[in-house]
Image 1: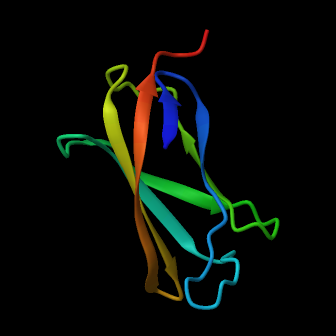
Image 2 (image 1 turned 90 degrees about the vertical axis):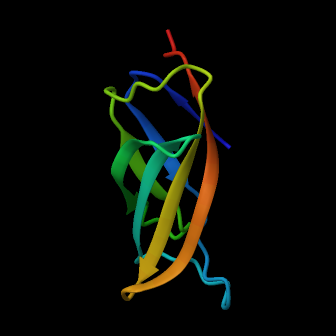
Length: 102
């Protein structure tokens, strides 16, 4: 589960991506995502994740301070991982929206 804060610049991390067959860390993938409301409406499309390039398989994305979903909203982040143009992984992660940290 991920917690996002309304109207706050923040980073979302997809941790330790590994190839399901070989177990090898994935460092050279294209990782994209989209944040959805529980009912399926898109809240934040076209999220691009960038490899941390530190051998961990971690990928980070910036969530802008313009993100404004209702507090306590039950949302989800869908992300996909492509390597060499082929889909390697697709996941859905639950997201809780909280009031901005202050």
